[in-house]
Image (cartoon, rainbow, N blue to C red; front, side, top):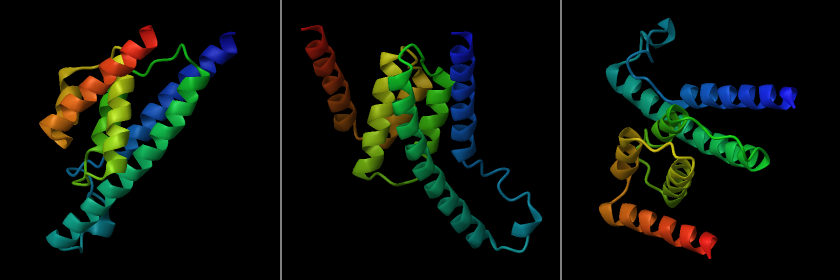
Length: 149
């Protein structure tokens, strides 16, 4: 009913807010007085560490979103939410299998929701080799074909 729709909308907005908070904005990171005494190299280290934490938290949020989407099949994320999620995931130099698997899953969900944009595709392409990206696109076609059969 109406209550379920309102709750789903609130969940969607809550997920978006959480994802945005995972993205480290270097221009505003050190406005706090706590950081004033830190050297440039420590600020860089702190920023890198924050990005790693943000990326890991974003993976956890993505897992929650997948469960939530499974329970609310009519819900689709906005392209902005997918974009912020991919920014959070890809803000580090980490290219582990776990991260790439999460990026691939988010990208596939984004495409199946019809929310892919050039910026989203550029982020995904930027963290993968061209052959990994092409393999991702091929695996999508195979899974789509198996669903149709």
